[in-house]
Length: 563
Image 1 (cartoon, one colour):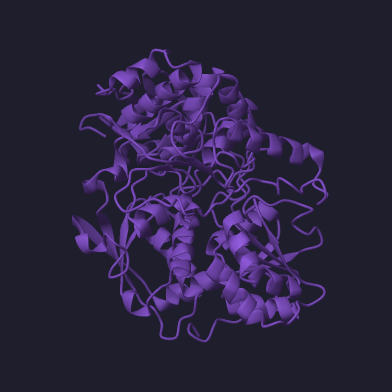
Image 2 (cartoon, helix red, strand yellow):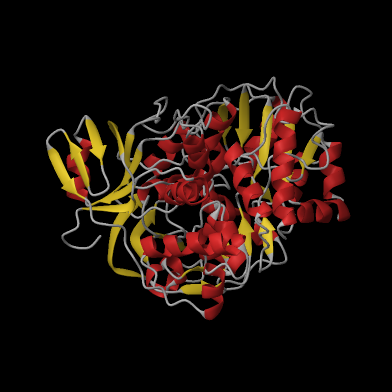
């Protein structure tokens, strides 16, 4: 925010309501119930609070790119906050509010305040927001107008913006230009591929948006993969999924396929043969995929919100801002990690989870991990867990990730993850009872190596008859597992391997209705699971998951490397 502008409009509008302030960012997807506006993230200070009609104040959002869809659904159903007030740059919820205004004529003010102005407004009981000012309990804050940018548009960009390439491309380019302005971009970048996150049926608004764009004639211009969806597309009827959910979820997937997207249906697009190379500019949504692409592959993508992902794929252009640019990819927080000797694979999602909490708004550089030689699956788990607790689109690991040697920015500060903090986080993610009824693997989608390690750990033994074991994976991984015999070994042990779905989008009855407690090796699902499923969660290593699958028990104790 520029000097002399303590309060700025991002999206203009009028609103009034009680002030609801929190110092901790919130993911609307997995954190807010779109049916009633209540916070369902059991780890957030606002858990149980209804956001409807409030002037919601928080530093930024975090977590899933799907938060834009949840916000749009809340807006369309009259359940949204009256206004959103941030103290840091924020894209996901801003994009949801922008789409509500652009496509559906529903305005929701979005503001950004300086730290001092934010702190002052947070003390107020209620606030009234007009186009050019905030009034709250005697506090008066003039609002600067939204940022404008003289974008250097190409002839092709202007053709789309003028509607010469159809209404869908025009609307997509309008949204992209509006986001570019609030991000401070001066031009757009050409991208080589996209990955769509908005194909998950997180709320009816996702379907409304996709059908609206499809009816306008939208077609993607670049190769575009699709995230996991909310049903097993070929089998949901046989699985007993109610048509009231299965049918719109399938229509949502079909809408994106009609627009030219590839039905890859995986939340791990970096496992596909089409994964981008280092330095390649792409446009991915889905938080874990974005973080892995930037951090591990060295590709370049902003953490694009749902809906913006399609707009970029339709135009082939994205705002040239954030981590598309060299100077925004440097670490601005250095985190020393006290990794205990003998740590197993559960350490990596735990470290990612804590790194996000230690660096919720800036890119970190993690130190003291290279000697442990993390595998690709370890890094997948770390990036996914990091994405649940941080808004940052990437991280660096010294001696491991490709851009870590570039060092940190001169103004980088320091933090630490201690063994004691790891033990406390372990207990926080293990509040469920010792008796479990379900083992959940594949959040994000399991790799072929992960499937092989699970089969090897089971070693032909069959799961306990009262315990369900479900792995979610992409079609390519399942085909490879079928080809090398891994799938047959898993099925012989009673393991069910499902395509299309991911744990964060699975619903009953595919998620067994009798289950009260879930065991998982995913830090991401350990965080989101209680709010999304209504079940208790236990977290541990792959070996812990296998033990639970065989016995139905997950003893409540710290692992040996933490105790």
